[in-house]
Length: 184
Image 1 (tube, rainbow, N blue to C red):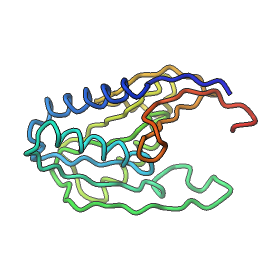
Image 2 (cartoon, rainbow, N blue to C red; image 1 turned 180 degrees about the vertical axis):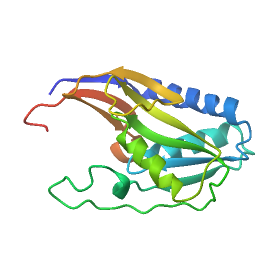
Image 3 (cartoon, one colour; image 1 turned 30 degrees about the horizontal axis):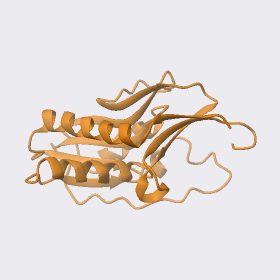
Image 4 (tube, one colour; image 1 turned 30 degrees about the vertical axis):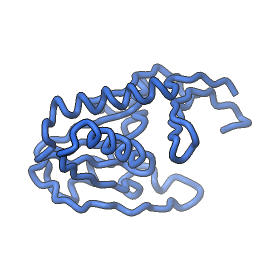
């Protein structure tokens, strides 16, 4: 397996800080904003961003949620095994609010499309923005682009992006690796 580090621990930290500054610049006090993580890997990014935002601006009252998009996906019936759903945690009303969808890797755009469809079940937001730690350009199946990007990556179809978190994986890093028959 060939792998390459896209973000090491230091670059990972700087990237998250930059994303937080961009959010603060555009949303000021976050009064009318809800940060919604797309499961399964978005909540880790959301938790880190919330921690950093509260460190930078202690008085922020951040509203957060986690959205399970399992049954909104257009491929949920195609697998050999039934999918296991997570649980949506939507403690806030999103009607007429600014929503920021958060996910770790933007690839084909299908997860984001599912997230947009799922959000409508909870109300009609005033505006929806997208934050992605990694944007795999040139891989879109749908015309979806992030408003906030940590790092843009050009990767071919046989390559995968893996985001590791120190809380769950022992180290903050983003890796690009080539998929072979052995590690598929």
